[in-house]
Image (cartoon, rainbow, N blue to C red):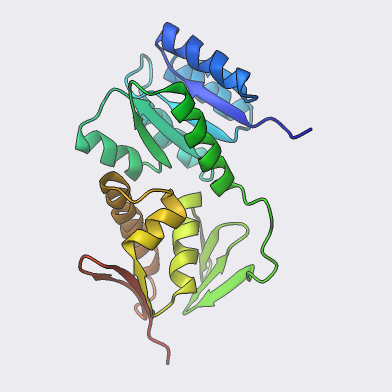
Length: 233
């Protein structure tokens, strides 16, 4: 029997929280329901989860603050926001904090389950690619694809799942164009406006990491995509 995927649901609305918790359990997920941000934080620090689902407007600690804290402690913990806050600035902030998806209320329970399953399948590869190198050298950086660690001299940065996937994608096409659409479909699962904005945020993060080596640059090709260039000696 397959191991149940563990989900941390943080939702202060009693009716919605109960509905989602019971529905996800019915779909064979192991669900821990926290009713405010502080309670959600305590659960995240005492147990391991495959995915977090966070409301944003909550008492004691809001969803943004919760996500920011969890990301500092557990950089590879994937989470999505499920919120009534639908302004572009809120959506972009959610992705900037590292969310793998941002869903707007109200949402159909069946759609939520499909999205969760698709996300978890992408985040947890079922078969290891034996041909994929575990350690990639680019300029003065070493990229450990298994541990999601980017090392520069004595400094090591632990990447998020999305950062690691995006860097791997760009490295596979080093010095070649990576189209927006190809990146979004492969990593985000959907080519749309908000995911494209999220992609821009993650590109900015990678540029900040890679700027330590001036021979490496991620170039923007207007309306087409990105090229990771390495000027080799």
